[in-house]
Image 1 (cartoon, rainbow, N blue to C red):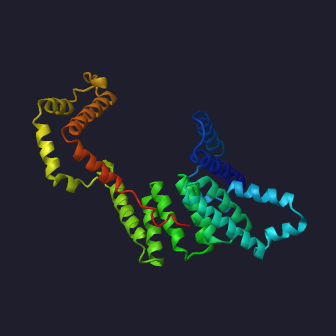
Image 2 (image 1 turned 90 degrees about the vertical axis):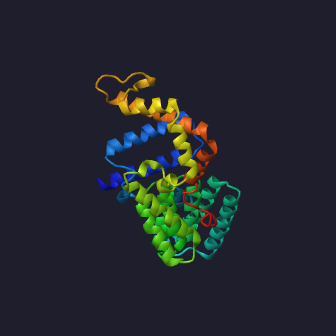
Image 3 (image 1 turned 45 degrees about the vertical axis):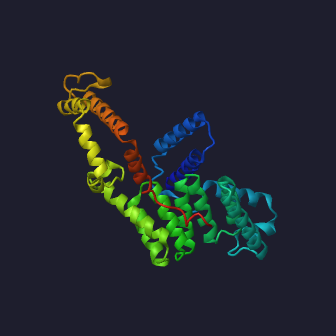
Length: 314
């Protein structure tokens, strides 16, 4: 049954990669989502259960099987040999270089294809897996990036870039605790890398925010916000605004119901809906009062996104 689950996991993983690759119609995306849910339910597996992951992805297994079925017996021996031939090494390097060129012009799908071909010829190069992980991350296929980083680390445990890219992919999946561990390992191997240092600080902050009751603030520095004279002046002005006072009074008394009406008897979901609406109106008042300050706050949130600057180069 374990092998069956592994096969189901590989299929689900492949479908996730297709779903995240982009270029699909909304109907096709919906069909894939339904297929994934059906497979997870039928076989009792989840894409988060990495214990079911196998070394090669489904496309890699298929590609290798196709090559084996088409080549002569002599070539078959080379495919399963411990080391690639000299010709295969040279061709794999050429494909990797082409993949790097495609990355530079943002043609990430083509880069994935070229790196995959290089891996077929020389599956023992950590660089090829790590480069493909970078391309997967650009395509927002972070699960694929994580798997390739794991393979790269398995081949070369001292490859700092694989740990850095793993941290980036995990952070993009909101797995900040795991990302912190990988960034720390990357820094152990490459202590002077400024990108790793910066991303580690961001991941640690995100980790604290996630575990904090104020984690839902979206990464805003609340203490800094309250010490900002512009923000406090705007807040004071707003609180003296009769319309805002009416909004706040309604929020405190639970008077807002759905669509701005009175709260339904018994409260519950209707009170929550009214509270959300009142909050939205309050936010609109803030936007109208000082749009420049609001944009500064948005910039602050955006600036707390992990950087891939040094990780872009294969």
